[in-house]
Image (cartoon, rainbow, N blue to C red):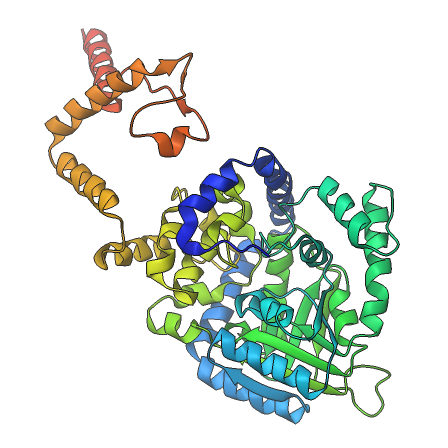
Length: 479
């Protein structure tokens, strides 16, 4: 599996922009998601109130996280769940693999979990003696393709239907030769069904952890989490500590926000609350249940004043509305978490020195904050990270020179206007039929797309001209 690195962001972006169909494939899904979310919000008049309520729930839980973590552990233990704590991703993966080895597992099924991707669980299993089976349809596709996920809700967004047809025909034991979506889903079902039933261990993530009951909640559209968890004798949950909420009553408003913001649906098909191993009179369920609570930089974010980012409920709405993501897709970010939320998270999960370039992959149009269901001020957080990157001198010397030169010009209006006017004339020289295909010092833009021809004069010239014309008209009117 080829995985891009966050420090190679510029190279990753160039490769993404050079793929002729990638932008079209991504926009096919993100544009549809954008439309469906807008319809869902329009049909839910209480949406703004729910956002405020959801933000309050998350802020309260984050503020008293130590209390709610202790309460969750006490209640989970009372249900018979074995609770583990992991401070890093490596530690969390080791705990999971150790549990599997203690049970001599040969085959493990896994439902989609971005936390699992974050802690490197997929790679850990691939480097072990155990077989990993991804059961979410999109995760199944990218496992066959050997790809990392490119979106937190639709991991196979970068793959076309034609790609899926080829993959299923190559890897499924009883593939379909139809290209209809229904037949492709049936082909995946045939391939996965027996693997569900013969798995030794089922691994899931958790959308929410309920402190007052010690329960974990999974939200899926396919029911694969339930099939992953129920047949095997052992169930392992991996969850970030920020998934806590005080109770079921506090989880419900977040569930109402999550599905509307993610897919535009009123509610997801499967919302399941898991309450430890099966009891004597239960018809089915795992005999043993573990939960691994993962920090992996979250308490550091809390200490560094980035607690607003811990509100994130992983709906993906910010990336569906991001003009940068729509052009380059998720792999270019070189991180498990792409788009605006990923550009804030990755510097904390990795390091700002490694992932500072992603903080500049933003036009600051504010759409991500407008659609965030828990009001995360993503542009503000990105500006804060940019400032930290500047102060720590992580920015390349060329960037520092350009910004400092601009600051000198911006403080001298006459010099700024002179250079702006010269710049417009310079750009006109390279313009052909309204577009600029090449111009010195702009290869970062023109390498993959044309630059639009500028207006014939600068904004300040146009502003003065319009202002003078209005004054003349006013004088004529007065006369």
